[in-house]
Amino acid sequence: MLTRPTGAVVLNDDTRHRYRLAFDADSAELYHRMRPGYQAEILDFLTQTPAGFAVDLGAGTGLFATQLLNASWDVLAIDPAANMLQVLKNDHPQVTTVVSRVEDFDTAHYLGQAQLVVSAQAWHWVDTEIGCQKVTELLAPDGVFGVVHHQIDTTNDWVLRLCKIMHSGDVHAVDLPPKVTDAFQTPVGKWWHWKQHLTVEQVHELMMTRAFYLRTSDKQRQRMHNNLQWYLVEHLGYAPDATIDIPYVTAAWRIPPVRLGA
Image 1 (cartoon, rainbow, N blue to C red):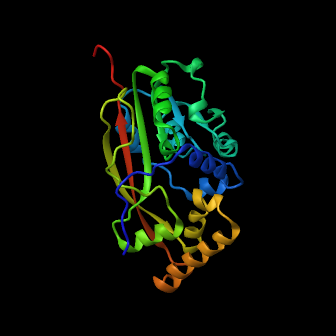
Image 2: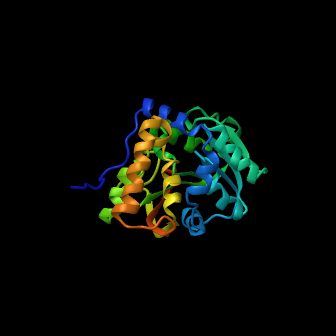
């Protein structure tokens, strides 16, 4: 019997390190092409301030940074994978990029400057205590912290089984707020339901961007492709050129800091 996730992904330091290494590979262009972008309304939900300076923690290839830039924000993008940041830099040369883990980032030049610090599809990679300290150092007096994540909607059994075949480890209880320290107020969430339209081949490519796939052996990867092909074509009956509607839910959390004396 298939079981649905009830908690968030919990990663220790060793696991975080191994997964980060997996993304620092030749998969950045594929990641950027296959991973979905973000709804423009998310930014409106996170902050009501005029466009200013934003810090994107775990920016990757710039999927969320693109929304910030489209809304005229100045962006500092931080990520430990240089090749992923290069994709962002190629598309948006005006962005300042820093190759660093969030935990190691030196905030000295940006203390109290950010009207928005955001982590999209990346906060689970960050040590909560250290990450929250970095965020509080970066935020301006009127600034706000935002955490955003996509996940495949596993309320249908066929989708849950698909996620298990693809080892989609970012699937968890969608209404569970992100972990933060007591330096922040209670997170306020909002959700968007939508679908990604992919061919069978593109579902294989989406699987190829998952951390588990990137760090596992060639033998295991081939087994995953075989299982996925059987599931989509033989079990579910999709033609190779058919369009598969993959349901998603995007959660965004607005998390203001605790303001002393407020």
